[in-house]
Amino acid sequence: MRHLMSPMDFSVEELEDLMNLAEDIRIHPDNYSHVCDGRTLATCFYEPSTRTRLSFEAAMINLGGDVLGFASADSSSAAKGESVSDTIRVISSYADICAMRHPKEGAPLVASSRSKIPVINAGDGGHQHPTQTLTDLFTIRSLRGEIENLTIGLCGDLKFGRTVHSLINALVRYPKIKFMLISPPELRVPSYIRDDVLTKNGIEFEELKSLDDAMPHLDILYMTRVQRERFFNEEDYVRMKDFYILNKAKMELAKKDMMVLHPLPRVNEISVEVDDDPRAMYFTQAQYGVYIRMALIMTLLKEADRDKGGAEHA
Image 1 (cartoon, rainbow, N blue to C red):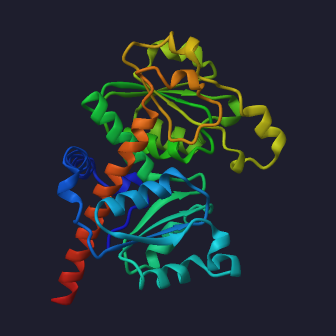
Image 2: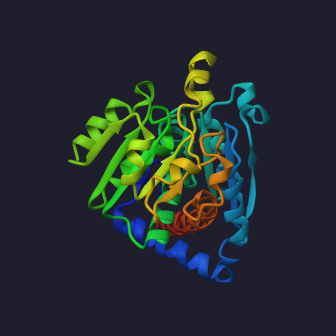
C-alpha cells in the first residue's frame, strides 16, 4: 500500500510522470471523467481548510468518484476522544482512499501505518504539506516550461510555514536552484531545514530581511501569510502579521517575467492591486491544484489495485 506523507516519497522521475498526467488531465478533462466511477475519497480534516479540502473533493468528483468525510475535529468522533488510528481503521471500511489534515505533526503517518487504503497527508501541523508542493511544482513547470536554473524567493513565515518546508525539500533535487529566504529574524527557516536540507545538499541560499532588496533578482516569489494559529500568543502574531506586504510599488522592482505564487489563503500580505498584474499566478496555482490531485488520486488507487490483485493471487 503506497501513501503520500512527503513530496520526497516520489522520485523526480515519478514526479515528472505525475505532472505529465496532470497536464493531460488539464488539456483533456473529459477523458478522465469516469476513471473513478464507484470509488470513494474520505476527507478527514481535523483542521479548517477551504482550498485543500475542496480541491480534493473537486478532484474526486471530476474523476467520477464520490466523497465523504468531515471538515473539523469537532464534527468527528475525535471530539469524543477517538484516536487517529481507530478513525482510519473505520474509514478504511467506507472509502477507497483518504486525504487527512491534522494539527499534530506525524498524525497522517500514524494513520497510514494502520490503514488498509492509501492515505494522503493534506497537511500536518508545521511539518509537511506535500500536495501543495505538488501543486507548486506543477504550476512552475507548466508556466515556465521547466524546473531548473531558478532563483526563488520565499517570503514571510518561514519558521512555521509547512508549505515552505515541503517546497524546499522538493526543489533541492532540481538543478541550479537558488533560494532567497526573506523573513524577520524570528520567523527564519528552522535550523534543520537550513543545515540538513540546504547546506547538506550544497544549495545556494541567502537569508535576508528586506523584500525590496530581493525583488530584482527573483524568478519566482513565493509569498506566505503569517499564521495566527501557529503562534503561542496574540502579541507576537500582531507584531509580525504586517511585516511584508506585496504591493504595486514592490512589483515594479521585479523582473518582467517573475511569477508570484501563494498557497492561499492570503490575509493582507498581497495587496489586491497586485491581482491584475499578469505575473500574479496564485489563483491559477489554486486551479492547478485540482489537476495534480486528480493525477495523484488516480496514481495511488492504481497502485493499490495492483497491490491488492497481487495479494489476492499470492
